[in-house]
Image (cartoon, rainbow, N blue to C red; front, side):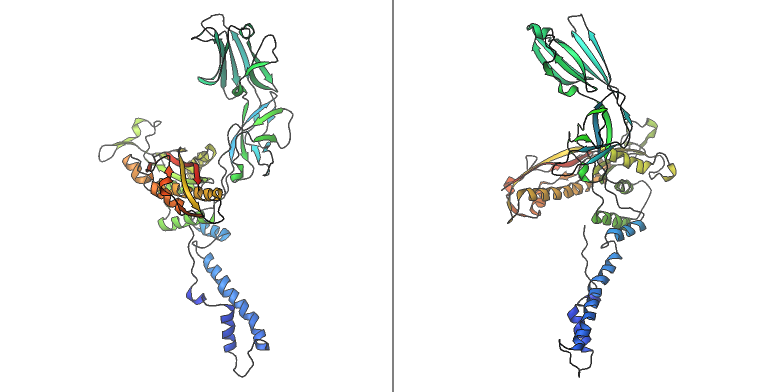
Amino acid sequence: MSYQYTPPEFLQGQTADVIHRRMLNNMPDDIDKSEPGIPWDFTRPAAIEKAEYVEFRLNEAIKLMFPHWAYDQWLDLHAGQEGLERRAANAATGNLTIIGAPGASIASGFQFATAANLTPSVIFEATADVTLDNGSCTITDTANPATPVMRLSLNQPNARQLTLSLGASQDDPDVGKLTIFDGTTVLEQFTFDMTVPDQVDALIDAVTTQGGAAFTLTKLADSAYPLAPINNALIGNIVPVKAVTGGTSGNVPPDTIILMVKPDTGIKYVTNPKATTGGTPGESNDELRERILEVKRYGVSFTGCDADYVRWGKEVPGVGQVIVDPEWDDPNLPEEFMWKDNVGNRHKAGAVRLFIIDANGIPANQQILDEVYNHIIIPDNRIKRLAPVGATLTVVAPVPLYVDISATVMPGENETMDIITDRFKANLERYWQAATSENDVFDVQTGFAQNIIKYVFVGAMLAATPGVTNYDHNTLFVNGGTVDIQIALGTYPVTREVSLSE
């Protein structure tokens, strides 16, 4: 938050006119002090310079002395005195699916990019060395009528195996069924008429297209004409990538990272099946200021209390909110870690779980979770470890609690509904943080989640949104209703649909 600065009394009322008037008053009365005169002209520049020094420079110097009003590199110096550092912008991460010639290699640092459209390309680079291995295919023709007439297994990189099964339907022998599984999960399923000769003669052709494994259902008579392509069967190597530049620009939608900065003929196909996440801006002055003042108010401890874990977590770039579960019933801890409190309840000692929300207000991705764990535990250097001896730490992302909001509003003059909606969403993100941190300690100790999204507070956020003159209370719905919504431990509100209309 911002803190209002009021100049001290001795620096108030020091305009150039006031100072100049005092200077003229201090001159002898028997000289001409009027504006065209030489005394007036000679003293006016000095009054202007002194006014600038008093009204601006001295006030700025005072501001820089205190974290409440300091900014930029001066605020960083205050942070350094408390052992803190400004969080840098975090780069988005994700995974690419790469199809190419088997044996082709992608070195760590190899760069990919989105296509430039209305915005510049976003550059990503591989974070690991990957050698393309598009798997091997094995076709088995089974003679038993009770089993599929043909089964194909495709061994994919990363120990993934896809199984494609073709056979008659158990419900109707005239209906053929083609199913592709990823383990026990059905990716695609097609049916066809078994009584049509050319479809009965259909086969599964494992086609290696551009070095990548793809399934195509074809006719024997005309193998170039596919009856049904299996869309999800085109699966290649997984390459982890990270945006070259930190910030939200690296959070790009699925299937947008499709280019190579320097083309490689061994790579034929590249895309990101899922959106990249975790790109967050650097820590703002207000955010760093609050962390500094929190340390000044409450001090710094290393006892491993809830406040310590929150402080440690927020030191990691990309982290926006940390929720602590200090008495987690970790299933991986053995029974000898159990202890009883004074009322007989059993707990597992030393098991701490953190739920991390990134600075964009959404559950953190794996890269940020790993960074938080490594920052607190420091696995390769116990001397620098922050967590107490004997504590075990689990860092996870909370389950999203999606929130949809609709209302009829009265916009101000020259205000657009899109801009108002964006402002309202920003207000909601701040409220979600407050709502999930109100009663965290009480929730954990009692075993009940008492944090709630208060319906009236959502209305208050809407009313306080710049550009909103008023809104119809009867049209405000939060997740389709007008009641408070409980926030269970391990969940976090995520704004999904906001529909504002006039």
